[in-house]
Amino acid sequence: MKFIPHNKPTIGKEEIEAVINSLSSLELTVGTRIQEFENKFSEYMGIDSISTSSGTSAIHLALNTLGVGRNDEVILPSYTCVAVAYPVLYQEAKPVLVDVGADFNIDLNEIKNNISERTKAIIVPHLFGYPADIQEIREICDEKCIFLIEDCAQSIGAIYENKKVGTFGDISVFSFYATKLMASVQGGMICTDNKEWIENVRDIRYHDQVCSLEDMRMKYSYMMSDIDAVIGIEQLNKLDTFIKRRREIARIYREEIVNVEHPIELQHKKHVYSRYVLKTKGKDRIIQDLKEKNISCTTMHSHPLHRRKLFSMNQQKYPHTDDIIASSISLPIYPTLEDEDVLYISDTLNKLGGSV
Ligand SMILES: Cc1ncc(COP(=O)(O)O)c(C=O)c1O
Image (cartoon, rainbow, N blue to C red; front, side):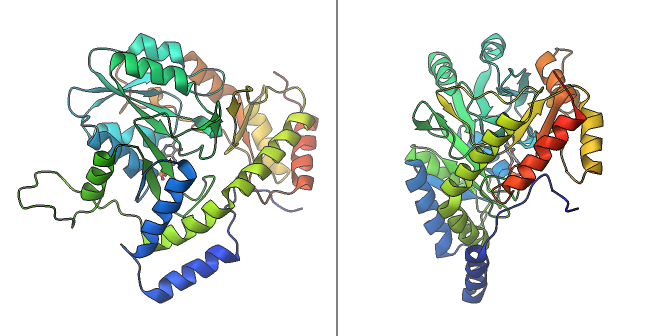
């Protein structure tokens, strides 16, 4: 019986040829293809873009560019990838963790309850490809003069009321890590319509970028390589097809799997299903039993930020985050997963029975 992995990058002959051509050209770093990828990404998003070495470095450069520093607070969800929180500490700011809602995204009321005079920015990941309440969060940020950073690492192509996520924030960040919707192996992107911020990122993402001898800014080694860029270009060409297939798989799961809580998808938000995460009873047993049936499933972000000493400085409760960890399972979902695999996974899950 074949093994069904939890995740699988979709790499075709186009990406392989692009890498061979890139290596043959000997333009490995800081070459012309990076600019080409940035231009294509800007076209896709309808907003200026600048590449980075990863999603984490993109968040770091965004916080740095917005002037977030010591004595500032940054609000972010307790339930997310840990990479969202580290850059806040790199800038010596304080992460303020807030609980999430039933859709796995940061909770609007929790944001309101945790804003203080020191809040300088809010980082909003659109988790698993599903848009957060981004318009409402935008309005709060405008009212309170707080910077909004959208984290689209898991959600490129997702739409909130006819507008792509990543176009609501002051700055938005993306990741092209191997498990993402489009993968360049490693890599990230920053989008913003503020040209000065783009130029600042360009200046500080590379330590050898000399602007002037008077320049007092710290610089980093956060450049994307040309090899990442050429893979990224090919993946971006295929992104719409990838999303279409992911949504098709999600539709089958939704129709076939019974007695579980499927992911929320409201009319005004388009999910791109970077993950298909459902809730069920007895998830640890089910994950183990699925493994015995050659299906790899997992609980995403199983060590939430509020349980990590480095980030959590209070005794606040995060009941929704804890409930998600206790009850959620992430099923395989990727473009090359075949219908027969999706049906096999659904059928096996139904037989194991979970119920909510
Ligand atoms: C929501 C979120 N933000 C940021 C990151 C960091 O991206 P990278 O792995 O490219 O540094 C990830 C994933 O890894 C993520 O899922």
